[in-house]
Amino acid sequence: MPASGVSAAAIAARLSDLGLPTRVEEHPRHTSVEAEVPDALSAESWREVLDVVAEADRFGLFATSLNGRNLWAVVRKAVPATGDVGGLGHQR
Image (cartoon, rainbow, N blue to C red):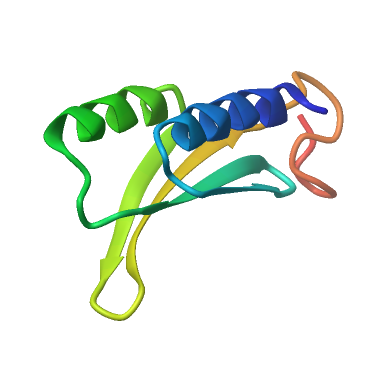
């Protein structure tokens, strides 16, 4: 598993420990974590959740009246220093 996957798995595990159901997905350039946030999350739990997702490269919250609240976090995969960095036509 790439380092981003390990970091994302650690974030997901910590969010699960806080009672949030999580999903981890591998993508070509990053690994993402999504968690459902219950309506009745205490202020102390929110602080803990924010401490966890602060370890990611990016994070945010989707909130809708239909689907509730979903927290997301992204851990980028390392980009090679040389060679085929961005695919054909994007080499250094």
